[in-house]
Amino acid sequence: MRKLSDGQFAWLLMAPGVALFLAIIAYPLLSALVTGFFEQSLVRPGREFVGLANYADLLGGDFWPVLRNTLVFTLGATVIPFVLGYALALALNAGLPGFLRGLFLFPWVIPGVVVSFLWLWIFNANYGVLNGVLGTQISWLGQPGTAMAAVIITKTWASFPWMMVMLLAGLQTMPKELHEAAAVDGAGAIRRFRSVTVPHMKGIAAIVFLLEFIWNFQHFDTIYVLTGGGPAGATKTFAVAVYDTAFKGFDLGHATALGGLWMLLLLVLMVFYLRKEAK
Image (cartoon, rainbow, N blue to C red; front, side, top):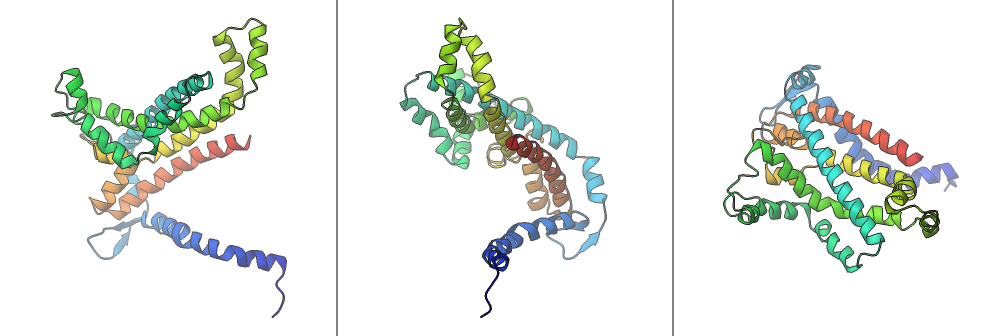
């Protein structure tokens, strides 16, 4: 047999991975993007080319409320656990008992659907723990004014441990001599945090925040289990809207068009993340 060159041997090694990528990522993605230009249903055979009509329908209708809900959920479910995780990371780094680290990780290791069902019970209007503690009869998940807050609280409980661990890892890379020198110069705890901790943690914190923001922007299970996008669409995000349009409305054309717009927004976030990581 003819001896393979280094380049040919490299392509031979990459061929299985490339084939797998084309089969399960590239082809489905391109197929979905093409479907966005057709009127196609899951319950009727065939499809009809409609050009940009699906995109025009979305931009003139449900896209903007869904975008608003997605941004509200994403910001709330990122900022709140970030602040909580940062505070706990600082406390653990300052000498909080180490066994609490494992205790705080407990919500993170539970599967997302299990977490959602747990909080579904807590927020239940009839026999939920929250109403029992408060002595009220509020339908937390049945009112537009409280449903989004309930979903954000659930996601916060599930995600703050991951952010805490990542930020704690960053804090433990900080040389202790920096704090000691600042203390010798007369800087108090708040001044040391602003002048020493924040500059050291700036890059790590930004990457952790952006990663969680991107994940929340495409989050599905918590919202779907708790509210299914309701009540009255108050918690319907892109993930839920695409699912409902495709598998409840049986409209693949509008579902894939919405997915295409969603993907463009995700690409913008990915550009910010990759630029930040490259610095």
